[in-house]
Image (cartoon, rainbow, N blue to C red; front, side, top):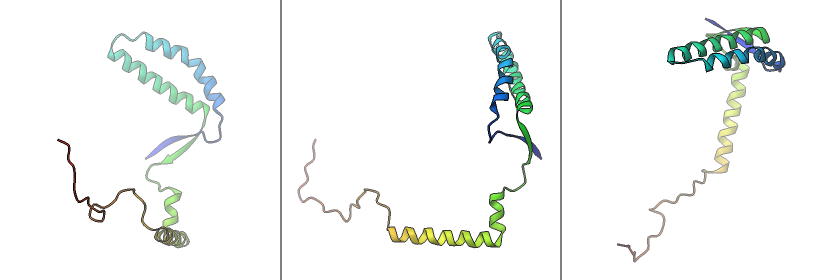
Length: 122
């Protein structure tokens, strides 16, 4: 299964804004002319489809496979990448051991001294 991804990482939004400005007035009029729920649904669906069309003509497209694993997970199957990740894990474990347990600010009731005479308000 393949879906379309828009390449927007490096900017280029001015073309999108220019195309969107041409359609914005019509979209607002469609929303103002809605009288019931069905009209509103139709207007929102048409706006959504028009936004996708504007994105298709404004940005470069990249077809992305859904079931294709990401590059991040390929390092786990790579022998060298797996060794590096083992070293990082060992480093983090040792660093946490050197620091000691995290301070939570709570005290154990069993280790805290109990007052001999307690006063209760009634």
